[in-house]
Image 1: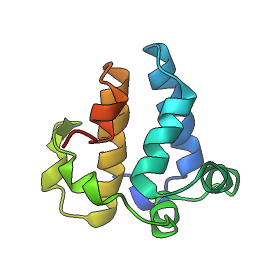
Image 2: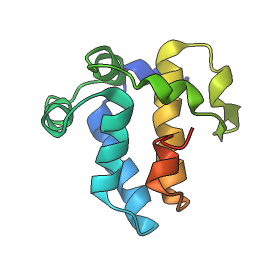
Image 3: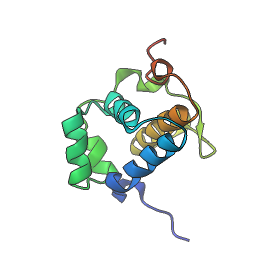
Image 4: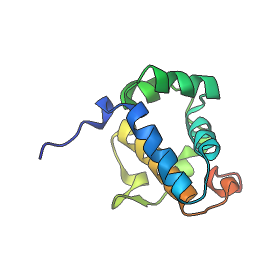
Length: 118
């Protein structure tokens, strides 16, 4: 099976999966949006625009106003890979988002997810 080029994957196709994952665990779309906005610097309107224009991950992150300075504090394993060891910058950003959504789904407090205590 050929390897998927994550840079060409549409964010608008993955976003509902993030929301579903969170909602299955009793969390909200609002919390998912808060996490994505915190990480990327998008405001709600900017996030909605990226979803509506069906931006791929490469453009979603390239157009992001500013990655949060504390994103380097995001550590741990996603899909068997340590986020902090991912060399490709785009893939690392995608894994940061995956990790934060995982933490939300596992019931972690928003203050901890958004690295406010670090």
